[in-house]
Image 1 (cartoon, one colour):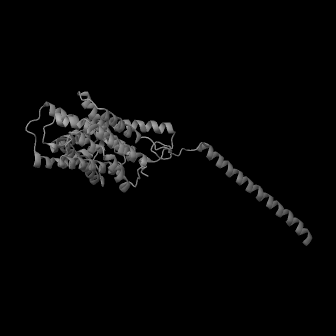
Image 2 (cartoon, one colour):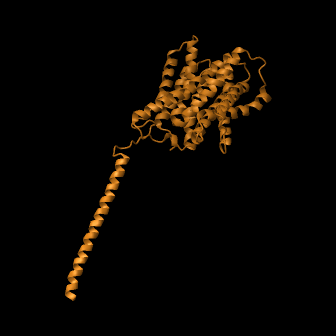
Image 3 (cartoon, helix red, strand yellow):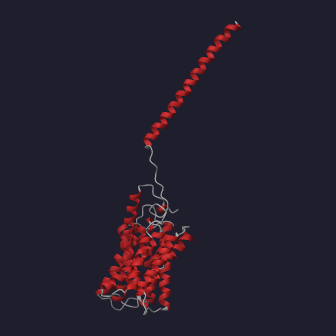
Length: 358
């Protein structure tokens, strides 16, 4: 079992309250990512997915390094590079490419399959077998998102679909490896996010200038879009996301990505779009799937779907120590009494025997 998901030994209500707070904070990350599609399509210059990924990653990573002043050491240098490539360097351009070439519904549905990919990778990497409960809700979550965002006008662009699937797969791999490797002792989630954002940004830097270059025009709206994606959608979101991955089982953290298409749907509704009855049903189904994945499977107790063993009531450690010392004193006293009786008996026998010999 992974150390961060070890069964709780505290009171049940404390464990559940702590997990609820962790889930709520972690959920802010995919909720902010739900704004990526509208920011990309409405504010950013088209045709520059690499530049958009670079602007989202590298400045935020450098800011995090300046704040934390902690650099990776030892084997964490290559681990940070691998995680930065999966979670940032490969994900960001694939995400922006899918957003540009696919309708939002298709891109959102592809991203909603991430919990299922995470479940499969967790078996191989973490040796963590997913429960039927979470697998079922994972499938229902994909169905719900599909009902919300897919329509008859949804077109399939081969490049866009491949980009969407590849981005989902790289993030799933990043989630699982982040869970497996954890964080170095004394390193917080902000520093870990800074390492990965910087590593991913440095990976994108030469590719961006070699393939795309800088957009000819960056207006105030685009500048605001880059700032939003780099701050709330980048540094803050990833710090919260990596913190949550470290505290929650992957079967609970991965379904939270369903919030991204749901938030995108709410933004569209606020912009004047309306939901049909099937879309409304899909929205409720996806939301229920995300919430159900946070609950324990029926028949099991404990905050992570495992039987939680609580310490049985008993004497305090101090009382136990006093009792043990008392038992030792009693045993020593009994041994002294037995020894004294044996010596007294031997003396009596010696006096009696000695008289007969004389």
